[in-house]
Length: 114
Length: 111
Image (tube, rainbow over all chains, first blue to last red; front, side):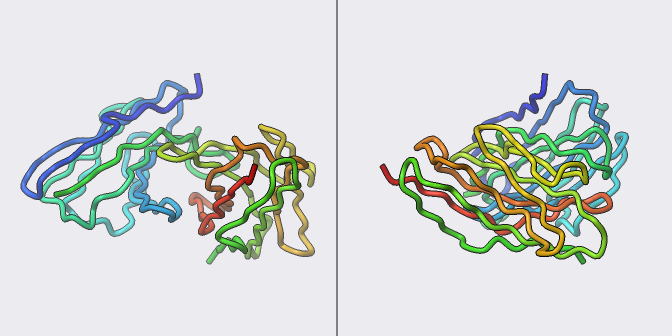
């Protein structure tokens, strides 16, 4: 099984809402990633978890809060977002952080902030 | 700092024609290089990767890429384009613990 799943597929939220994005993998990977992707642009790294600990935070605003409850799950909690946060949010995983290991991507959550 | 340059943000080819998507990298050490494809409203799918073994790498869907150290290039090719190849293609370099993506090339296949 080389699948990374993400829910929901689409999300529309107001600027005062609180919502969460979920990501799951069962490949035994110990590194998980959140990316933000705007249309026709490459993914931008937001967070990296390595062995369930946050190892990279790319200066992401605090209205985005990641959580890694266990080695298979990754959440992204959203609060008080801005319209410019509308984007495709991609989750990825790899065996470990670094090395020669490719990242496996989920299908993404299309987020619209109104 | 590492960087990846993809020449040509848009490439159009006729169905059955050769596909050539260009990728150049800057790296002071041998890099690990990847090509990903992204279909509309989907995540990224790995096409192939170079990890310092054979310089000619074969991937899925008939794609291949050749690592040329002297040219710091890792261009993606496919002998005969198919309509289903229309997508966004990203070259990426992995150094240390981080991926660096190129800006992407949108491939259009003309029937």
